[in-house]
Every structure is written in C-alpha cells, then in structure tokens.
Length: 309
Image (tube, rainbow, N blue to C red):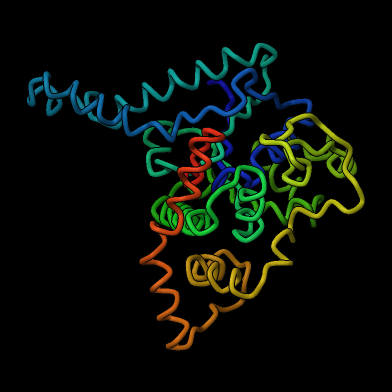
C-alpha cells in the first residue's frame, strides 16, 4: 500500500504550508506537487451524495447478501482512488511517504470513511494570531474569521473524541509548539509518520525561508509566495499582541471557549451584563456592518472577505 500522510489545517493561515515543508525536509518524505493543496476531503460530501444516489439503483437485497456493497466500503474504494491520484503526482515517490495538505477542516468527519488506513496530522494555531494573519493577508472580516476558527476547532475536537479507536492514526500539532519546541515536535511528527527523526536537524527548520507571510504583503493586493530569509524580528505567534481591548473582548466573546479548550488560555473571560448586551447587539448587527466592506472588496478586488476557508 502506498505511504501517504494527510495534513489538515484548522483554517488557512494555520501553518499547513510550514508544517508540510518541515516534514518534507526528511529524505524519506515528498510533497504532492504540483497539487500544492488538495482539498479532497473538503468536497467529500459530494462523494457521499454520489454513493447514495448510485445505491438507489441497487436492489436492497444485494447489500444484505454482501457487506462489500455498504456505503463505507464504496467510499473507501473511492478514497483509495484519490490516494492513487495523489501518489501518481509525486513522481519522486519510490518508497517515500507522500505528504498532501489542505488548510481546512471541512468535512473532517468523512476522513476515515474515505481513508480508513491513512494517517492524519491536524495543525492547530492560536486563533488570535491566525485571525490577525488572515486579516492582514486576505482582508478577512475579523468577526467572521473569529467565529470560523471557533467552529473549526469544535469540529476537530468532536472528530478526535468520536475516533478514539483511531488515536494512533491522528496527531494534533500546535504551530506555536513547532516553533518553540522544534526538537520535541520533530521527534513526535517523524515518529508518527514512521521516519527516523535524526535525519533532520532542528537547525534546518529554524533556517527555513519564510513563505507567504502576512508581514511581507505590504501594500500589495496579494500575498507574496516567494521565499524570503527569516528576519530576527519574525514572530508569527504574537501578531495579536497589539490588539485594542475591544478587539480582544470581541474575540473572547466569539471564540474564547475554544481558546481555553485548545490550551491557549487558562480560563474563559467573564462578561458583565452591560458587556453581554453590547456583544449580543454586535452579533445582531454584524450583517449590516459588514455589507459595505463586502461589496467594496467584491467589486474592486474580487475578494470575498467572509470566505475564510
């Protein structure tokens, strides 16, 4: 069976590119270029629909007589075809592990239905830094990005809880830990994939070029994906440190629960009655407030600022 490891990010700007580039420093791993982001799982609901529609034409007794006609079996065979497709793109594969990535957790519940024997690495990033990066890079709407990060982390937690029997096939990696505790995280990641960690030095990771950083966008309309040398001031983990208090409170209201559950904050922030009323009002008026910016960016830059994944 081909060796493939899937990397999924909680959202765009979570570090999926960085992690995949780190993993493929190992001589026994290769990326799936030219398919730089596959999005195979995020569209898997259409495959479920295909299976259901197809099976409507099958006699019900057929499945009762042969378990191989079950939905999950059909999906798993489709998943094997998708895996073969990814491996065919990796021309250098040989006996190497192919690393394929997607910066989205959409349809995560279908992962083991499509890829029952595959390993999955999920990248988590502090929602505050991720949202700030997305706002700087892609002009995301701040509030929508906060809510989407919260929703995605909840999705990931439900997935992990529901698949405890598959714990050996799931690895959660925090972007911040990879930066701060490189040696420890490299050992975890390569051991999970089945590669010798000693073949990659942590110094190689620290000296990697920066690709697609929000700090490098400047006045350009699009993020520059050209590799640049990492500066001494490069600090992607604390981009939210200059937020004003009202912005921090809005994030706490929309996503504070997930911040605590993912270990980025010790306890949830409390809100006074007046603050709760203000936040509820902000919830109710969000659509009206975002509409002018939404139209402006859609018309002038052809950007959909509420689409974060």
